[in-house]
Image (cartoon, protein in one colour):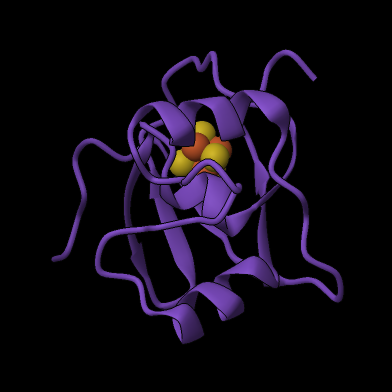
Length: 101
Ligand code: SF4
């Protein structure tokens, strides 16, 4: 069994035609933890530019924020546990991130 005890939701990653922009709250968050530079360029640890490009064209219907968010935002979310076979294991805790929009 490969149960993930902390995961509350299993969210399917889908492909989108156009990258979903990060909202301002997510950007500020990324900036504050050093994952975005002053020009707004993302610098995710362990993620190659090629992977990042692909991640930008993926999205999830987030059950916590009740809206569609880009996979990049999901990946850096505090609820993100892991991604296995195209599904995100999400801890499902209440979030601040992205709620302002
Ligand atoms: S990890 Fe975060 S963004 Fe992704 S589905 Fe869970 S709450 Fe939503």
